[in-house]
Structures are given as structure tokens and as C-alpha cells.
Length: 453
Image 1 (cartoon, helix red, strand yellow):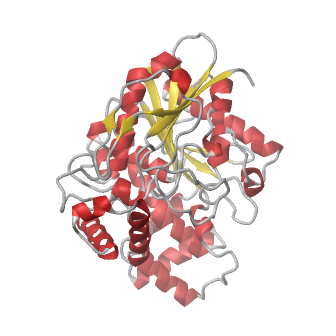
Image 2 (cartoon, helix red, strand yellow):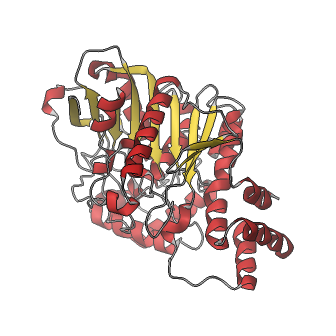
């Protein structure tokens, strides 16, 4: 690998608890040689590899990292990476997000960003405080403004900035794409497995706040500001458990606030808020297998139909029709319905919305990892080429995986460079597997049409 300049742990903003980020002046790059601390969090579910995040600091976490080829050249395209973690875990210091390899190989500048998560980043406190919701998104906007103002000093081109994220990181990118506050700060967006229908509306955000205050034992802002950070995390975890049946898996999530997020992303994109911004968005082929028990026995058909009716919001008659279509398409009906309702249909809505206003491309990642297939998160190490800290074993790394990773690194860099991944626009789809291939329509089209009615 060629030479790379790494500048790590650069502060881009400061923020008090539940306060908007305030940009900080640029300092001497040479002093930044180590990653900054992550935002406060508790260990995740342990479903994916990687070293656990242990170094956290509520008041010093708003940092970013830059990897740039160490040579004089024309300004290079920039990839700005946001980590995943369900909006409650994650850090830009995770080894899978190291930008050195792709920076040198593909001649791009890579920036990875810390942003606030959980209650500290996404609790909508407006009913008890005149402040903003979506503080994590405001952090990301502050980081993008830093990139716009300073990345040329490190060889990056501020007019060729692509935002990139997987899972919650993809959700960050999707909501930034849909936010008028972020327009003009990036030129392209890559959303990996980050399109869901989980954007909170005003009522849902208010329920999250009410539940959080009940778990914390107070709705007094001064008391919340005085809490030790562990007490905030305790209330956060209790809120997640209490709301699992009503709000779902991610109660701390971007919400419609009338300022940063004016509408759910598909609605906002349909209105043309991101007109002219190329979008590359896709998913894995078996998204929700990460969360399912592989040893669970298959559902009896009558129970399956009832579950599909409930989950898809369909009548019993329509649920029978949906199940019949899925039975003709796959041997594992419930996992397929689960992922299609949760992620594939919302992805289709976003692609339909943005394709009317900008070049739009989609893909399906179908690499089969041992035991869980092409599940959520299996694509993570392929993008930047970091099969480290258990990722190689997790995904079944071999020579084909390395070749596929190279293809994807080249593709993502091409998109960052030109806004074109080098295959036809949506509804065409690229399938990334041991052999990459393009089809005119998505392989799940019949399934999705059945769900859509």
C-alpha cells in the first residue's frame, strides 16, 4: 500500500448536553494522531464482530478523522463515512471504518465522523426545552461544514463530497439527503441498508420523551442536565425495553421536527428537496436474518398467514395471497416477508421518490456469510476493505471476497468521483455476489408487488 496521511481525532464542534453543536476553530493538524473518544453508549447486542467501544466522553466526542493519499495531486473526491449501530452504539474509531486502504488504492480522501447517539443525540426535548431535536443530525451537518471549509487543506475537493453509511449510518445519510439544512454540503449519497420506515412523527417522539422521563424519574430539565451520564444511559435502555412493542427497535431515531427533518425521507425526496443529488441505495439479500433465531422451527402455515397479515397490515385474504407468492419465490417465507416489509418496501419508496429528481441507482448485496447468509451488516468490511477484528471469519473471507471487495471499492470511489457507479439507473439493479451482475429489475420485484397490493 502507498503512503497515506492520517489525521485522527480532529475536534469539529463542542456541545453541552442536549445543546446544538458549536463549531470550533481549526487547529494544527499535526497534533492529531489518535482517535477521539466515542459518544456515551452501552455495549451493543454483540451480533457483529469488532472490538467493543470502551473510550467514551460526552463532552469531547465530536471529532472526525481524515485519511488522504500522501502526495501532491489535483483535489480528490471525498467520502464522508457515518457509522452504524442502531443510533445507540458506534464509533468512527472502529477498525472496519479505517479509510487508509481505499484512500490510497482509489485516490480518494476519507473522512469518518463521530456524532451523538441515543438519548443524547435523538431525544426530542422540545416539549420541555426550547431546543432542537435531531442533535445527532446537527452534529453531522456541523462535520460536513467542517469538510466544506477545510478538506482542501488535506487534498480533498469540497465540491465532490459523498456521504456514506451503513445501517444507522445509512439512516443518517438518508435523513441528511432529505434535510434542507444539509443541502449544498455534499454532492452524492450512498445509503447501505439504511432505508426504513422508522422516522418518528411528532406523536411518537413525544411518547419516547414521556417514557424516557418516566424511566429517569423526572421531567425537569435541570435535573436531567445534572444526571451522571450513566443515569442517562440507564433511562435510555429502560426506554428501549418499554417501547419495543409500540415504537419498535429504535426509539432514539431521527424524527420529523419541522426544522432539520420536515417530512419522512421518501415524502421529502418526492417533493424534490434533494433534486440533482445522485443517490446510490441498496440492501443485503437477507437483511433481518441477523436478528432471527436460526434454530427456530418454521411456522405452521396458518400461524404464518396470521403473522404476515399483522405485520404487513393486510386482510386475511390478502395475507393468503402474499404467502402464496412468497412460497413460490423462497423456502423461507417469514424471514423474507420480515425483511421486505421492514427494509425493501421503504427502499423502493425512496428510490421511486428520488429517481424523479436525480440520477438514482440501486444494488443488492448477496454474499452468503456462514450461518446467516447475506444478512444485515455482512457488507460492512467489503466497502473499505477491512476484514479485521473477526470480520473475516464472520463473512467467510476468501479470494472471492477480496475480489468482490475490490469491485465494490472501485464502484464506491467511481460514484464519489462522478456520481455514476457504472451501471444503468434504477430500476436496474446490480447484484454483488461472487459474480457481480446487472438485471433490468430487482429480483424481489414480484414479492414486493404482492406486498404493495
